[in-house]
Image (cartoon, rainbow, N blue to C red; front, side, top):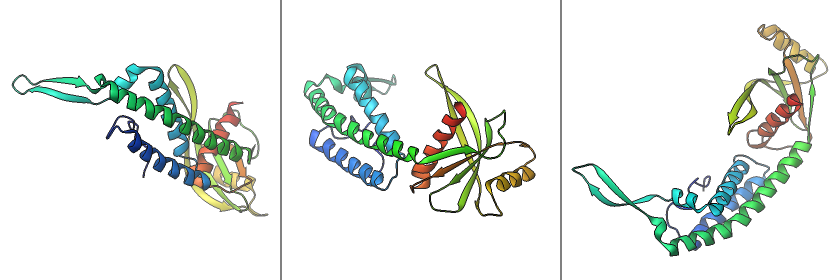
Length: 236
C-alpha cells in the first residue's frame, strides 16, 4: 500500500477490524522502510497522523469536521442541499474511539523508532566549512560525501525563511550540480575554487562539507537529514 490517507480514520468502511487491517499493512510497510534505513516520507507521515489523532481525541468537534456529510435532501429547483451529519450515531462514535485507542500507541511506537533512527544517523554525520568562512552563509555550496566512497555530491543551496502559526522557521533548498571524486590532486578546496571560477555570481561562497560515517539511502534519508544538519550548523 502507499502512504496512509490523511482522512483514513473516517473515510471508507468504519469498522474496527477493517481499520486494524489497514493500519497493520501500513505499519508493516513503515517497518520494512525503517529496516532499510529509509526514513522519509514515513517519519513525517507518522508524526502528522499521531498529532492529528491526538487532536481528534481531545476535541470531538474535530471528529465531526472529519466526517463527510450525507446528502439527505436535494432541491434541484432551488439548488439547495441539506446534509445530516453522521456523527449523530453513538455506535459509530464508539467504534471510532476504539480505533483511536488502538492506533495511538502504535503510531507513538513507530514514531519513536523513526526518531531513534534519525538521531543515530544524524550522529554519524560531520559538518565543517571548506576554505575561508563568509559573512553571508544563507547561500553557497554543500559537499556531501557518503561513507567509504570518494564520490562527492555537490549542491548549490539557498536558505529560506517561512512563517507558520506566527513562528518563523528556516528552510533550505538544494540544487544538485554534479558529482566529483576526491583525490590528492582534487581536494575539496580545489572543488570549491573550480565552482568559483565557473560561477562569478558567488565570488566567495559559503561552502560546507558533510561526511557520513555510515551508509543510508540518499533521497529517503541522507539528504533530508543533511539539510537539517546544515540549517542547524548555520543557525548557531
